[in-house]
Image (cartoon, rainbow, N blue to C red; front, side, top):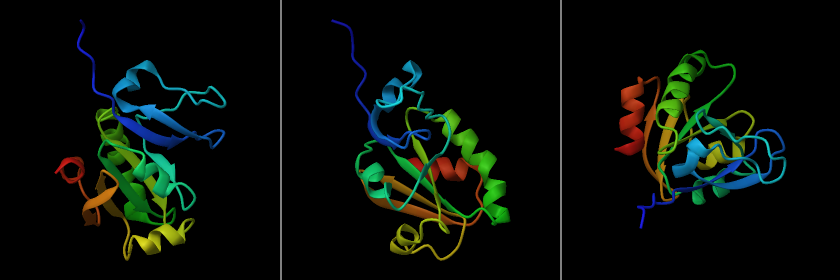
Length: 147
């Protein structure tokens, strides 16, 4: 009997049609598709979340989650974008990288106690485990997420 890869469920929103989808991060190489519009769900890059879906995504994901709390006008946040892209690509299937625009999603930002940006928060099993405020290199973010 062949060995089976353990399932790593995650809930993510399709960036095109906005439908919430349940995907298996362990099968990211198979190219998950949206159950509604059938377009690819790309998990090798940060995925936007907002006030309307943050709790569902965090609670529905068993893998470690790294949340980037940012704003479009923030220079340090823009400088961190390539680092987050690299981390999401390198850890696709084992880490879900999310982005929360704090200006567009004030309820969630307030509930999380965001006082400065960029703020990076690591979640596991739906619970906050660690956070880092300010710029960081890829190794620091990876350690924060899996710590």
